[in-house]
Length: 541
Image (tube, rainbow, N blue to C red; front, top):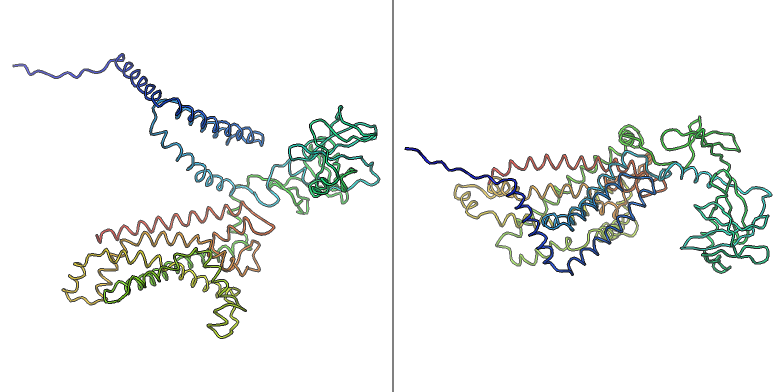
């Protein structure tokens, strides 16, 4: 007897092609069924996005960059394909979120990493050509007995321009980034050029109103920066200014004509003389791991950095420990059914959590004032204790204020965790003869940690970067006297990074970005190890 076999018919190539055509037809039919209004909105939105993208690409290309414009072009092209092609419904919903994720998180992180490997900071913010022009302009002096040029100040599109009359009677116009050039159809009043087509001539009142911008304007004579610039002090007459530095493009040197000192490119974004003296203005260059090396090897940076790192860990650990202990104690006390009016006490306990932290920090700053603060004058009978000026007292003050701000949060989470512990487990412990302390230690507390351990880890990470409290209460002070960076005894890593990058005359964005990467690595490693450790607690369930 022969057993019949089942043969599975495989679709042919023609069948697969027919199915693809059918799916495309269904997709187009679905898109067409959405209506012309939906398509109109879609086209308008994509048109706006494309216009902004084209503007950004052109601006970036003008600045000499091509990697970012290429990424923007590819991204915008992908967006157009996703929203114009029928189907791809999941991608249509995911794209906005992915775009914002890339712009506001991934790009920021990548840019921070890039800056950490450059010398970007005060005096090193632009290109080498911009640095050369800036040095020549910064060191300019008026040429003695130079010819004076009758001047008319013009305005166009919010920018100012100089219209001057040469000794030959010609009219020439120029701006900050535009060397002088002849204007054949200028308007004259006598022998003086007073106007040019497309420009607005400023009267005396308008010149006085914009005096600072006009007197700061330096118009190049030509494309060669060594030819000097035209500048004015009264808005009616311009004079020639020549720099005391001479730029030699072929030799890549700057020469001081007064001292004869020659400054050469030192390979680190600055012009330096043979004796090590550098010109103030430099340019941005790639320095590799130099910022990380400085952070760990330069004594004036390494010492404060280590001290701040140790205090950051101590602050985060002590903040979590003190707020957790106090919050847990209050949660146990107010969870006792024998206490009357518990709900009112609980409301009072969470009041500090209801106020903005930065406002509370400012209030406490006034209370800790050495001369007029409530603590010294009222509680301590007129004492003069430098709570915020002494390094150790400043740290103690920060811990006290953070305890005030943080215990309500711990009180809330531990209250919920305690109330979620089954009563029958505790009753079983009492039946077995366990004391109150034994029940808490061996039953309640381990079960409590299962719930709150991840919250303790997140609280540690939060306090590790608790910028608001430090900056509002002490400003990071008192400052270390022997540090070459702006950092104080009560600074934590995040406030130190902020001050290195944005506070003071010397701002070192490259070093601050290197510190930021170090902070990220520390927090990531600690969080990873802590979360792995909390898995042990899951066995208690």
